[in-house]
Structure formats: C-alpha cells, structure tokens
Length: 81
Image 1: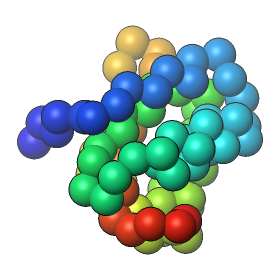
Image 2: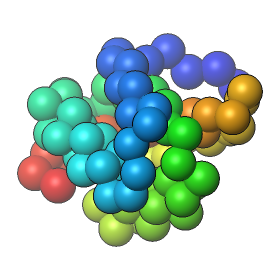
Image 3: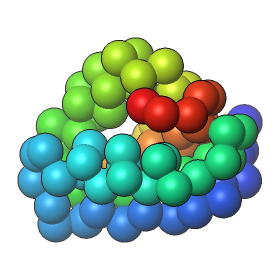
Image 4: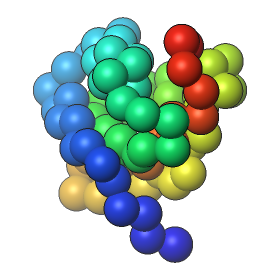
C-alpha cells in the first residue's frame, strides 16, 4: 500500500540517535493523522524506529530499503509524545 506523506524528512548521513530525534521533533510539529516519510542511511534506524513507534504510540505504516536508504512512513496518532 502506498501512503501520501504530509512531510518528507531526510536524515541521510545521520547516525543514531539523530534520525529518531529529528523524527520526534517533526512529529511534534504535525497534526494527528498526518504522515511523515523519514529517510535514513543508518542501518540501525530500522530497529530504532520500530522501538520508538511502539514506545510513543505512533504507527509505523510501512518501512522499506531502497538504494541503500531506509524509508519509514509514520502516522502521528496523538499529541504530546
């Protein structure tokens, strides 16, 4: 399934914990129901994003690896996390 993101966040070249921190900052600026596409080149971002979305209650709609990048579609589910 394809998702239409409200925001594209390019974290290429950043290492842990920066992709998670940048994603958290971006999510906090968005409205509930909006989707962010986060792009990372850090292989550790896959388990990091899975853990972060479970902890915060936001939804990891889809993740995929493409051309040495990791793509994550995350939907904001609630305010304040």
